[in-house]
Image 1 (tube, rainbow, N blue to C red):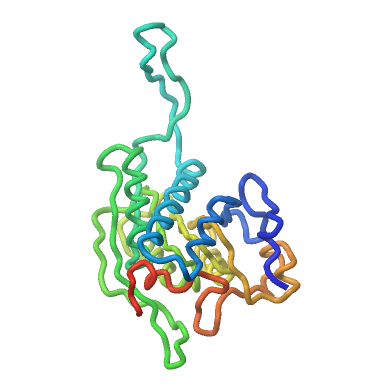
Image 2 (image 1 turned 60 degrees about the vertical axis):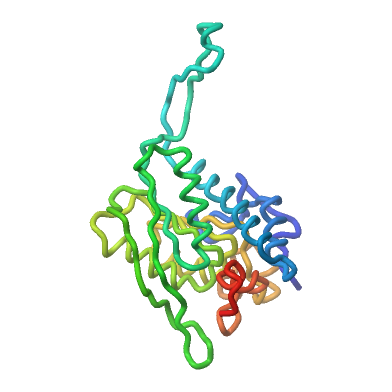
Length: 272
């Protein structure tokens, strides 16, 4: 038996119904799922890969901004103001004075972070948005099993206190690299982020469990697709998250099934 949650999408408020808790947002977006299916297919190569990744992350960061960022009331004139005294828009807009950081976790996160950085820069005030960079990779043992994450360098361009910090990383597999990166921002810099967000195209149950148990109150996950292709048939037929002990989305060498392959390699035309 294969996955059932995407053959007949059970959604509420635009999100897949699940049992992973309130900080997990699995978006029920048929258009994004269509693009993601194409991105995952072996015939999808550059430059199509980056075009689709850009489309997907423009939509994903839009969801985060609409759902999570604070708003303010404005009264701003329109082009009709010279013709009528009613030529004003009065209502809500995104608060432009929010401070936000997009973190590039090289290498799969390079393009997604730039897309998010540009989207944030288009709506927030100049100077309140920045992009940071972290160079890290999986560490493995002799059996090619993931043992953790190694950090080789960072470029942190300022404070984090009271900032929204976004971590756009296409494949949410084990959660090791992202846990390391988020912990650095929460524990080793001056001040506390206002909130941290993981922005992923695909996530596994293992990834969700890692982040929600490590950061029970401080991290929100936004993703387009849940991949748990190695789960027991009973779990695949059930609402995601209701049979967590029977869910599995990773091979023995921690690659996602059905997944999309190694997106760091795919996006950079690299073999390893």
